[in-house]
Length: 88
Image 1 (cartoon, helix red, strand yellow):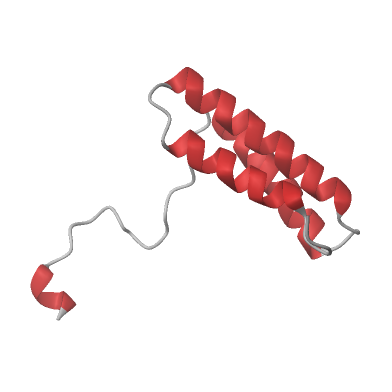
Image 2 (cartoon, rainbow, N blue to C red):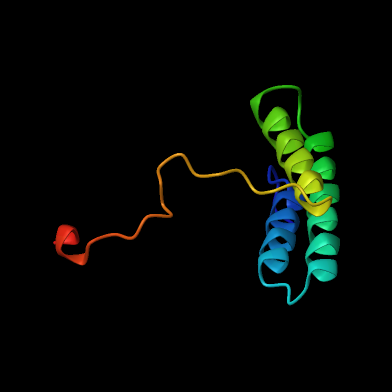
């Protein structure tokens, strides 16, 4: 284990990736709850400040998603199709 790194951050990110790849809703909810748990553990290892607040927010977001809340909508309008000619 390396010094100065919070090992729970990588575990939480891996659980979030597992939730994205989950084949069904039950597996997705379990993975999101595991990610929330890991974010809580990461927050507990941090001193009060920006990172701790960020990790606690990630945990709350994952719990909300596991409980069936809709993911936050993108403000950029990514849902609209992009004209390929504009990408050049």
